[in-house]
Image (tube, rainbow, N blue to C red; front, top):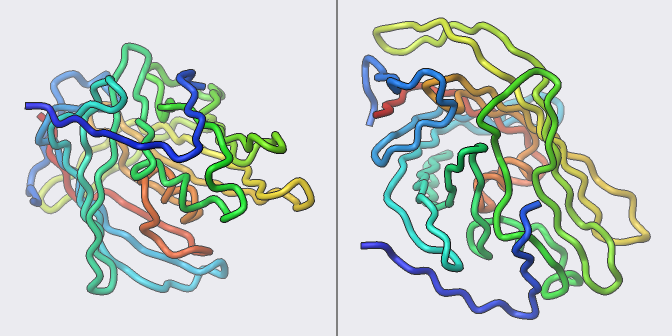
Length: 253
């Protein structure tokens, strides 16, 4: 039975335009699929946090599983449940996505988008955003670009947050697991964000690189915590840190 999420927007204008471990990983039979999305698929990542000079601050894990579906503003989204463990601190979080013929869209809610916490107090209750955004396209090629997401302040009107993506390379990597290795082609995608809190302030820039393999999904994330938190849909990692998430084990059906 599907759960229905009910939301009570507070002075928000929401735009409808888009802009546990396994020793031998099973791989999706459709090897051309970059995002196998059957319920029960899970991914375990090793996590490292660094300061801006490269000194390691914390280590831990992220465990993700696709866990049913729900309705958000009348649209069906799948649920991705994450458990983050860092220095004995455990955080659980749900985010939402839906797979389309063109690719994968992440769903937007006040709880899941991660946008509400990144805004200064002066802009909360005074912004517009879309209900979903394209995190991934089905057909990838080097130098491909697309617009991911944006948030606008309403009064005065200016762009607070903008995210764009570019496929920067196609590489061959050997992925090592407990009892097996696999050599696979991996696309590297760079996500760039511009964050502006005031017309009188210079924008801040954030960057995250992600690596994705056919038949598996995302195998690595590396970049600014603020942007990775945005994709995770919650303030998981500390501000002003660099996050590295590397796939350790997985199972896809």
